[in-house]
Amino acid sequence: MTDTRLVLASTSRYRRELLERFGLPFDCIAPGVDETPIDDELPDALVERLARSKAGAVARAVPEACVIGSDQLAAFDGGVLGKPGSAERAIAQLSAMSGRDVVFLTALCVMRGEHEIGLHIDRTIVRFRTLSTREIERYVDAERPFDCAGSFKSEGRGITLFDAIETQDPTALIGLPLIATSRLLRDAGYALP
Image 1 (cartoon, rainbow, N blue to C red):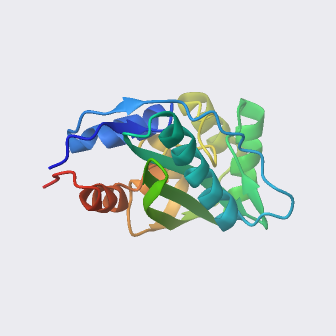
Image 2 (cartoon, rainbow, N blue to C red):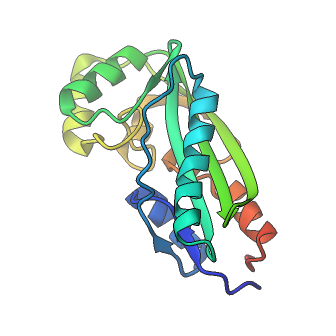
């Protein structure tokens, strides 16, 4: 087992709560990475670049630590849906996704110093049921998912918005794919059951 300091390159409470499931001590450090997409950057490339950038920024600041970087986005209609930030934008996102499939990409990068231990991208397909305007408004008012890509919290009431979820790892949709994270941490020498 390694005694290397573990750091989550994130201020996301969702990612922090997920990583706490492992029972390993860790710190959270804000990566301070510009998340602006590059012109014509495809969603897969964007989410991978941001996960690597977040892990790399913190790994350079704390080179003795093992650093976990992650990013998530929703690929929809040839573009990217980010965090809505407001009720109006959340309602607009959910209205657009009503009755449609949306691909959520969650990238994970684990680094120690300049060494990349591994990279993983989870692809989860969410099939939204057809939603009325009133259902969307009630949901947004109740859960206020303004800091969530796609305007919902699948671990909360957001699950009621779906017809189906196709995934290899249900935690990826919350923000950190724990199956891949546990594999990469074992590769880095951490003892996990």
